[in-house]
Amino acid sequence: KNILMWFRSDLRLSDNRALQGALKQLDLLNKEKAGTSSLFALFIVSTGEWQEHDASKFKVDFILRNVEKVAEKLKTFGVPLVIKTASNKKSVPNAVMEVCKLYHINEVYCNIEYEVNESKRDEKVKVLLMQNKILLKSYHDQCAVPPKEILKLNSDKPFKVYTPFKKAWMDVVYQNPRHLTLSNSLPSPSFRQPTLPSRYPCAFTSSIPKSADGFALSEEIQRTALELYPAGEVKARERMDAFIAEKLGNYKEDRDFVCKPGTSVISPYLTCGVISSRQCIDMAQKVNNGKLETGDPGAVKWILEIVWREFFRYILVAFPRVSKSLPFIPEASMIKWDEKDGHFDAWKAGLTGYPLVDAGMRELVSTGWISNRIRMTAASFLTKDLLINWQKGEAHFMRHLIDGDLASNNGGWQWAASTGTDPKPYLRIFNPLLQSEKFDPNGEYIRKWVPELRSVKSNKAIHDPFNRLQRDQFNQLGYPVPLVDHHKTKAKAEKVYGAAIHLG
Ligand code: FAD
View (cartoon, rainbow, N blue to C red):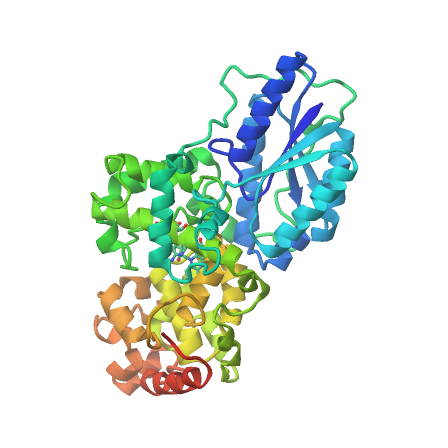
């Protein structure tokens, strides 16, 4: 009786609920009959699934590098990681089945992925395995509190707004502290799986591809990726340790300042499951004397951001329409977008004439990551100033973000586009100029990412060079004229949105 641990978006060995389950079962089986059961691990390279989700090259590269780390670590315990390819979602059940047959697997362990298509895929895997008398055991792991646990509390009227959700989340955690308990999922250091019987094809040699078809990074970008996002659990923890030591205390004040990176940049690791949300909360809680909601304002604010992540996963489960390209507020599908020729391309290329937006869009393409403040500003600009459907922006972000995640990206886009969970009783429209002056006061961020503006010395003009420089000075910069006038488009957005949805 052998066991298979199927890794997906949980690329770590520590605090992994499914792996913990697999190891417990292995222990039981070997207690019953010593040395008769072995543990195998599986990762499926499915380019079709990545394409389906608009996964970025940054993300796929990061996944593959982390799979390699998982394989290395598993190997130290004598556990082989089998790499299987499946061209798309449909072929995943057979791919799992083939591995089960090859290695005489009786039970498959995995962590739940909450998206609608992933749930359907796993249901198909379950049925196929069951027909072959193989058990699929799936665990809640992606969130500290399983979304269904909160849904249960309020199933008639699921939460639509973050604050009451957060309260319910806290209540569940206080009542059941086990939600935050880390899983004992690392094999004990002395654990070494006995040499596998020779009838099994040697999975230790199954090589992890360095890149996947259609997802190869250019050499230059690959260098950036290796430098900015080193792979592995150890690196994720080091990043968290450094963030806690150097930035957590000021997180509340600094997080929005785009010129000084005051956030953790742990999102790529969370998205691929290289670190768990429990581990993150645990680390922040420890320096906050075990508290979640009181104590150091930086630690509290940061923990509450992790709860935002859980909120958007909850929304995905409670309102599956959001993962089917539908707006959270149904009437929002009536918004009459008014996209002008060339505007979407200019936004993508960072050529809107609004320096902060342009800096952000260029950073995104160059590094695969931008801060939350920039994400909100760029998203608001696309949807309210350019009146372009948020779904186009959502897809563009996914195609470039290293931390691209359906729940958080969709949640963030719909929030910024006012088609989602923002409870404001009026249409929230970011003023890109004020955002720029407030969060990049000296224009450092703009100068870093928009080289055409480096010669602009004035910290006032840098935010709005077209209106604040002499025309001939502006013309020499080679920087575009603003695509739109924010004040005019604001009024238009209010009209267009007002005709479709009633806010509040
Ligand atoms: P920190 O500020 O250090 O926060 C720690 C963690 O909390 C983050 O890593 C993230 O997991 C979580 N978090 C923080 N803010 C949010 C938030 N607003 N919503 C959900 N989780 C949050 N986040 C993604 O992980 N993937 C995405 O694809 C994504 N797309 C977004 C698109 C838009 C339009 C917007 C407005 C936000 C999006 N976010 C997304 C949320 C947020 O911007 C990022 O999680 C955050 O910027 C990551 O940086 P960090 O790790 O330094 O965050």
